[in-house]
Image (cartoon, rainbow, N blue to C red; front, side, top):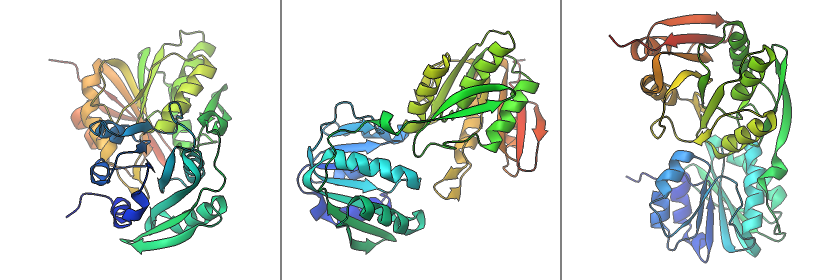
Length: 351
């Protein structure tokens, strides 16, 4: 039984697409590279997958859409795996048109349940001669010709800024296609920020887990300054390349202090913090998946100083309270509305 995702299996089934110099955009399994006839370029926006690709030393690797070190028109075939967010497909196709030479074969592969039908429409808009060439394993394969290669590709061209105001304090937040809550402040994070204003954190060295575009860290420091306090330091961590890029841009514009880490969870992180804040994800693609947050709750205690605080906002139906009690310490529900609950848990003091 293959461990490869359906989209990767369907690519191997269409082996003619792997002739010449090949770029793969959106790889999710390193085993694909091992089964390709020759090495090329592999891009992933997932920090954990990127780390696992490091063993494929003959491949050129790319974390997300940073174009430094990439040459225009250097590939004969560019394979685009359908991203989770429809808006991100335009970004991925633009990168494909930059990497592909004049006349290169450009391909989109996606699963039906992930919206490949809509993705195919976007593909044909960008690549007018695009046609469906295969349908298998609940996937579709569309291919066309790179008749209008892009001479340049820069992620900064796609960066957009949104002013976010909460508790009387405004920060500008960077956005890119595919980043959570691009262009707005989601309701869960707003509830968390309001609560942080009402009941301030107990420490000045803070970690924002699953930091997204960096709104919590930038706002928290700006809010502290507005009340005459030291801004402290808020480090951020996220698994997605665009989120990391946005968080760095948000921090730079806001003058916020803190490191932004590209990591898949806490496993590769060193250090201790007085407080950790988070609005963690609970989706994988289109399905509910709380495993990432559950794993985080099991690990976060080792990164809190004794007596340190975790402040977490989540949909009220998600089963986190018992886990917080078990792995961190006493839990309080600080505020709750129709959809979300803000929890606070303190790390148990050693006996």
